[in-house]
Length: 506
Ligand SMILES: Cc1ncc(COP(=O)(O)O)c(C=O)c1O
Image 1 (tube, rainbow, N blue to C red):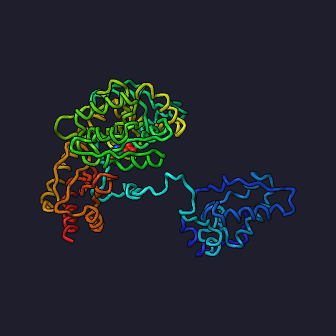
Image 2: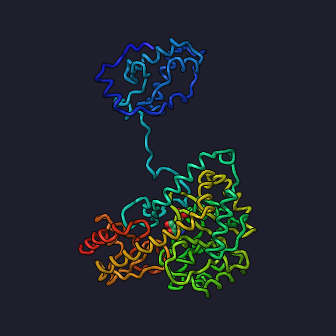
Image 3: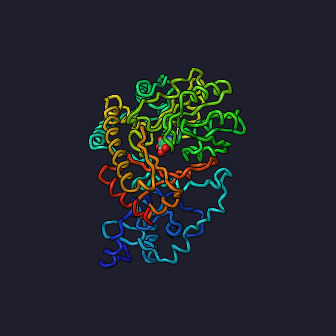
């Protein structure tokens, strides 16, 4: 193509220093209207100009060649050349000899500003009533903060990383029809079998592969359970304090949440029955209550199961982080005690492996499998086949069990390092006991010190400590800090606690 406006060398250098974008312009669809009064070249020029101004074609995008575009539109090449020349002359595009034509990387300000999309203030946008005023949401989305001692982070050691690369490469090499097409909405059978074997052995869960559904993790499982619950006002129990993402998911879905207080024996079942005897479901963390870390006593487990059997309520058992048990007698799952098929057991691989994985599982009472799988299918059809295949191989070949053993040891050391550092540096302000399970500990403040104040001061010193009092809904809040220890190597723990100590001095 002959460019009438060829940029001088200096200009070209300046313009091309902006990384050119993927050539999405090839896919930009428009037609010319032969019956229209405007000449064809002008129609092409106007369409491209308006796409540039609206941002549909972004700065530095490569335009298709004049030959390709002419063929695509069924017009003469000279019409396209004329349109491009006009764009070049007006500075919307620039050309490099032999390298094609690009949308200018630095469009004049007035154009971008004048034509850029207007942002509507959030207050004007209409969303479901249940989504408005979800207090605390911003806090809980801060899980991306990598500073110590944020919650929910995991470590992956060199051995697991290497295995993961190897198994991913092997899966990709064997890429076949069963990876590329639609799959089983329950999840891959091989993976469901491995999950079943693991849960029977490690957690005393009663299950068959046909009752297991592979999910994207706890969050999706909670969402699906909420969708399949019947009843116009879906009243549910939640723990108080409890896991905020479960509460918020329920509130957002329009459920009527009934907070039930938690004490040293776990959630107070008698109180729950008193407050909401007709609740449709109970969302609990019985083996390691989040956030307090207590286990639901056997007496309360039996009381809860008996009530659920009588009332027909579902018990949603979130068995998060049960892989990481450091001492004491391991408590089998609540589901394993259930004779009446009232328990929906949900677990996550996002903690056992890493949160970016987005895989977990639900073990369902047989009567619920169909509804659950249908809801899941309508939501996102199925989990990603390739990810499932890698995890299935990881489990089948024994790497999962070995990974858990190694990480358990590592997290135990990190937990101990954290407890020692806390007692040494801030023992006057906090009372801390090492938890038997999980990925975080709870340090109770002394002498009326406010956990929220320390949380704020901690951030200013580069330390993320979450105030537990924020997780209470109705029960009188206890002031304590939650510190995640699973995501932080031993050597960074003491220096970070030294910084936290400075926050206390303030
Ligand atoms: C109580 C509880 N359940 C479950 C999870 C895991 O959720 P997901 O599988 O959606 O990552 C977490 C993560 O922080 C948690 O604290």
